[in-house]
Image (cartoon, rainbow, N blue to C red; front, side):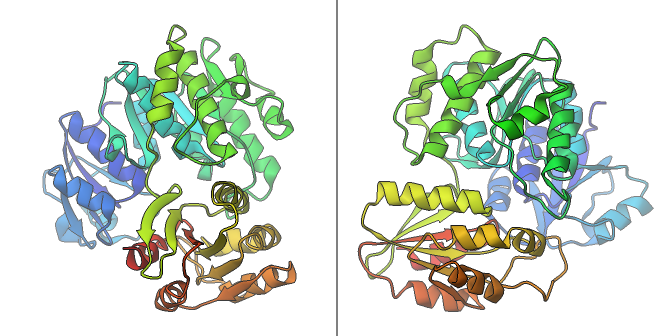
Length: 426
């Protein structure tokens, strides 16, 4: 169904919500909303003329609101959502709204446990460079666009798709990219088989005239393709140029983006795809250079919050900075993930020379006293790593400022550890 003209968004500063707000604004909708705190995405929206209230209050909702869209991080008990019910304003979740938009557009959805943000950004860059005018929603602020949203045609959508709580299934892609599948979001998926079942349903939704871009020789992915009727395109065979982004995992992201672009537009010239990848500048919080400390240590920030992402990022950093001391300040994201993947985290965090571990970022969860940054640090030590649990960002900041030249500091995690990187870097 088409979305109405006056829309209020609760949790508008979320990375997906803020991109959707920009899309709706580009479509001529009147958009306003609220978030619990100011953030880079809130500032971006304010600069584009969107009225954003910092803090939730039932008086924020304009009287002429026709639809309230809420982030999945916002509970039904939120005072604005409760007020919307009193005002008889219909509600819709972010992913449901995105699904409605997807129905009206030729959609290329990028999914997978790792790499989907970078792959989505690269794909949008390729299609923009090739003058295909894509509309894109990306899970980070892409430097090439200065936003997590790229305004383009109303009939072509490139979108990052999240598997959490089966949100991926709300979309209707003609082309589905699956970068990889690995157990994550353990508060929702009890095991790998349950996660594969979600991807199996997503693959089955792709029409026969569409395409699934993935690595069909990966046994975990292959099990999720058993009900697919669309042709399968192996992205791993693509050749890509040298990238600004470090690591083999980013080269794989580039291969997936290139394959998806050529699946959507078979006559796309390779010189356009490769030039776009060569010029791609990356995105916020993806091995992002922040500066130097007063003592001369280099500071980078990365969104890695899964053991595999941590491992790949540290390995890529060692490849790019051979012989350097690597210090990681890690902000664990959710108690469930930390508890379920404790052994894997212990292995990954034993790879840096030092891992400094912050208190767990609860996000949507209640605190679990059975797991903490101290228990994770102990697990790293038992795996022959060097780890230190510190209980505040202030303490972490002071510890990192002790590091000197020939040291690479990487703040990591899906929470707000990036603020520490900004505080210590000049």
